[in-house]
Every structure is written in C-alpha cells, then in structure tokens.
Length: 218
Image (cartoon, rainbow, N blue to C red; front, side):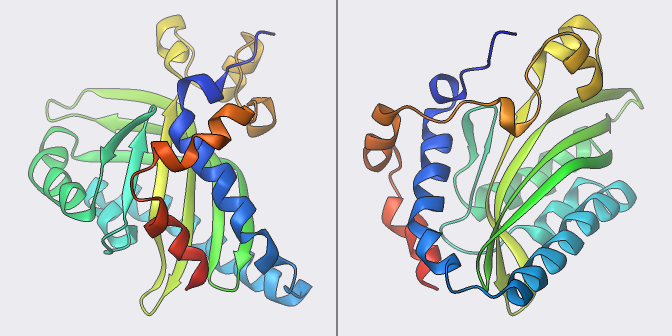
C-alpha cells in the first residue's frame, strides 16, 4: 500500500496538531483516571450529539458547536475555509443551508484524547450523505480532527478540520471499508507523522500561533 503523505499535503494543520499535543502533554500528566474518563465521556456525548443534531436539523447546527471566539478556525482538505467564526456564521447561514439543506452524518472509529480537564482532541472517520436544493443526494467519506474545549455553555469546537477521501468518489467507493479493500489509506494509524522540517516550520506557517497555544493555558 502506498501511504498518503499527510505531512506534504497538509503541512500546516498536521504540524499544528503535533505541536499542540506536545505543548499540552505536561498538563495530562496530572490527570487521574477518573478525570480522564469524565472528559472522554462528556466529549463523546458532544460528538454523538453533533451527528444526531446535524442529521435532524441540517448544517446550521454546526454553529451550535463551533466556539464563538476570535481564535476559531476550520480547515477542509488542507485549506483554511473559515479563518474566524464570523466567516463560518455568514457562509453557513447565507449559503450552505440554501445549497445543502440536509446532511446525514455518521461517525466511526471515534478517538478522544483528554489534554486537560477542559480540553481534548477528537478524531473520527465520518460518512455523510448531503442533499442539495434539487434533492440530489451525494455520499462523502473522510476524516475529522478537532479540539474540544469546555465552556460555560458546554463543550465547543475552537479548531477543527475535515479531509475527504476524494478517491472514493472517483472510483465509485462510498465507505472506509471500500477504501481499505481498494488499498487506500483510511484510519489515523495509516497517516504519517509530519517531518522534522514541518514541525520546525510550525511557527512560521501558522499566523495565530500564540493565540492557538493560549488554549492550553486556559
């Protein structure tokens, strides 16, 4: 199998995640098993609620789970699509709900890693069926990563990223199982870590580096 070189295709986000987890590592050392379990369980509930609410009420529900903070950002397929919460709100309310009024979302292989008592990383395989304004339904498969932070309004997402399995549509495959049978990378253990050069370039590539790492201090 030829591995997908995420460090080449998505250097900024992968480098950010590596540096982010490294910076938060010391905070996890003081976690008790009970505290870790509480974080995992509560974030798991949020992830499950995202899929349920979006499937029932449409893509506008993403705004319920995005954290309304200046440092919010979302990437998709290696591109920064929402550099702030205002961009996300405007696009979802004025464009997305009109061209894609319905989404059926399912997660699998969910992994939640507590970083602090109020911070956790999320990764999961996703499958969604999107329905456009004409009623045409299109399947998508991919991988979701994000940071969950505990707020006064519950767990929210200040950072997240989606990577679609583009080969699945080109080849007519519509699930991670089909991708595995076709010899395509799919789960997180098949993705390569960023190179040392990518990690060293992390501060140069991410303009709001200081804001991002302030998450660990809250």
